[in-house]
Image (cartoon, rainbow, N blue to C red):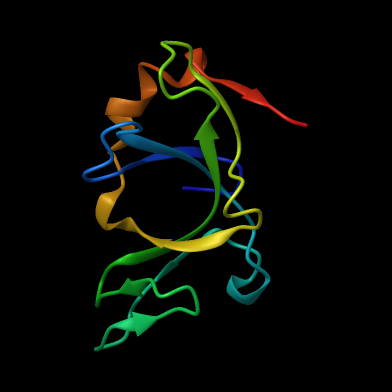
Amino acid sequence: MTVGDWIMFDAGDGETEPVWLDRVMSNPYWDRQGVSQNNTLHMVSYSNGVKVGKGEVALFVMWYQKINVMSDKCEYWVSRTETKPIVQSNKDLIPLGMFKCIRYAVIITVF
């Protein structure tokens, strides 16, 4: 996974928005990479409350939200609640193969 890649996360019990669309961003603390594997023997906690276990991967991502969750259109914009990139664990990451079939149908709106 590299900076600029589009990825999706399972929203868990998100009934109105079952997946989250994210973009991998450059993190200055990780040598400008967008991912950092936890190679320690313990869990690593980040300032936003995300915990990344031993062997798991932290991702530095920008969240996008669906413009109209009731619409069938795949139109997204930058999240209104998370306006800067954040750290996310790879635990709920949807494998690339599932994302590949829809990745070209997404429209990103920038205001």
